[in-house]
Length: 369
Ligand SMILES: [Zn+2]
Image 1 (cartoon, rainbow, N blue to C red):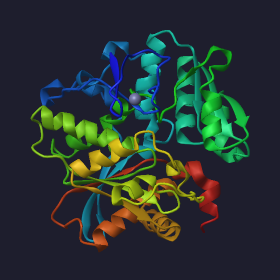
Image 2 (image 1 turned 90 degrees about the horizontal axis):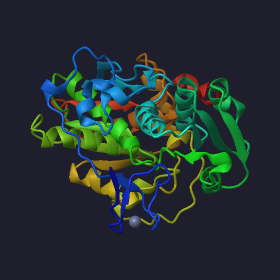
Image 3 (image 1 turned 135 degrees about the vertical axis):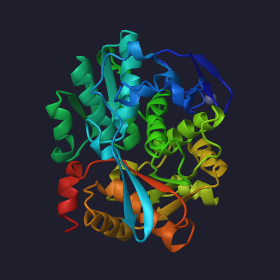
């Protein structure tokens, strides 16, 4: 397997030590999955039923909770028929499990037994869970002062937590130092991560009667859901299984909206402010221009929403029975805008992905009540 940098054109042979380009750019796996309806393994009730489209063979998936095939509900939302893909119900409570399952198995098959990740949220919890299942040593570098509530899940999984003083970038730099022989697995960087996330597109396609919805709404921080959704549907398009791409809408919080700024041509040189949507509080996405271009190609767009809009959306969707984390509520705040602006129509099929479980953010949600 090879990794490619789309910024400078560098090509690398895939190797656990290589995670970003020398130019600072994010790397892409040089791989296109192919999936036909007839390729689906009907007796496999996990995301691995689409294994022909992945860079790792099914028989080499050794560390698995049986992840994937999360429920998709069709609800009446403000007189729109909305499909709600519930990745809050993944094994560790977020969509990250799709990508982490792929990366963990890839590295484990190459004999890597010590992982290092930088995260204070869902990415860390997911790696901690998969490492626990696979008997892999797991170090998670977290910003100093991270609340205990947020790291309880990682601790229970038995991860080794290391607090780092400084900025979010300082935390990542520490994690990359291979302390004690560990390999940096950073989910925002690893080229195989989005090839696990793309399974969400295959599932939405199958659960919608083998059709692509017209619109897919996703929250965006680093842009891995946006990228995964794009990749999955693009592969289905190239395989002739769908005849057009859904429009992809990436939703960001006003307080940290680099992708949105890049999309509208505004400066990305700004001071991010704290947001309750902490899972998408990423001021320097690793593949900024590339992710913006993917969304443009689908004729979708980025939308930015206020803290009040996020809070209101969380309480509104809760009244319909969905307990989701504030980061995921950002998606519904964006959906509200798409409806108010008549960007999406009532006769179209619109899907939204819930990225994470409300139970992960109980302390934050208590403050909103
Ligand atoms: Zn490069």
